Image (cartoon, rainbow, N blue to C red; front, side):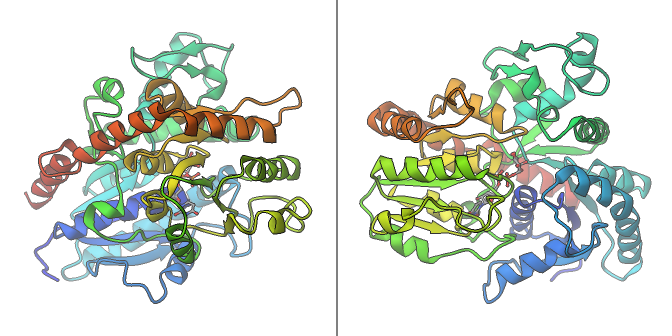
Length: 456
Ligand SMILES: O=c1ccn([C@@H]2O[C@H](COP(=O)(O)OP(=O)(O)O[C@H]3O[C@H](CO)[C@@H](O)[C@H](O)[C@H]3O)[C@@H](O)[C@H]2O)c(=O)[nH]1
């Protein structure tokens, strides 16, 4: 390891959908010659190390370290509002200590802090310590444009100063951007009112910190989100952040991946399998979970379904009676997939997804049509992109009791797979997404310019 290589400190928000892209970004920087200190929470580092056991997935120039997140090991971290409240009390002080120690050690001085866009406090800390700083926004450029528009939304009477929508409004920030329903603003559809206010205030602070960072990156591309990037000239694309771009493997998982599913996919006909995954957060009630299972059964097609152990509140007997036996010859349920590899497998026909931004970028980059089942936050906006702007998927309608029925699932799966235009448009977008990371592409150029700047 050369001591003249720039040394960056990278800090993600302690959440799966953030650790994966920030670590991928770090792997790209390491490949370009940087030394990276990657700061997980202690709890997350344990999980990440466990999932990496026996695997040579990490660049040797990346050093994984940890600081506490203010929660006890046995506490539930799935309530993001509670986790945020707690880590804000502890992490800033601990990160400061860590950075001061590193800066004093020979050859470990930090040249730049790269923080998750929702860890604005880390950017503030870097500024106070007179360290250069960059932010990576892990969701769409459109969602960042929305966050940057908060003062205008308040002035226009669309939200109050707590972020609460004053009335139901559908807004479009610019032509060719997805329409946004004010009740679905990403801070306004998370938890109860106090949680929404906490997330809103947190976002206001994050926006302030991002605005004055030296660099602001987004896991997206100009070609996919031209209008949103036009609204934010300071925002630079680095996406899609995929391990395959650097011929590597994804790291940063909180769970062991089940790689056997790839062998199972090898045995399926091309373009036949429905892949179903809801990211790391989504929780189902038993009725909806069972209806989804029965919908997949009704589709009568091969499927690979990621059923995290905590995906339902009722841990026991989650599946409908006899379901597993009935689908045994064509369905497979696993706890955690190597998703990026799954989506690039030729047997995959479509992706039934919660539309987290990483999943969205991964599906697009592989030319896979979507069936959208958003849950909260930016996922509703991502669904609008998929269905209305890019037209590479369909959403589900709920029945009168608020359920997505098995018949609706079969109907929409049949529609997406029965209309070649979805696949055709998805393949076009794949080309656009991947051209940005190839030599000369916009994301490629962002990395080159950033490295030059780091070395300057
Ligand atoms: O079996 C699985 C399931 C998921 N993943 C990976 O886990 C990540 C999940 O990220 P994402 O699809 O964005 O979902 P969340 O985990 O829900 O991500 C959170 O963070 C995202 C980025 O900010 C937001 O867009 C989401 O709404 C928010 O819930 C992706 O890289 C997937 O490839 C796997 O590798 N295997």
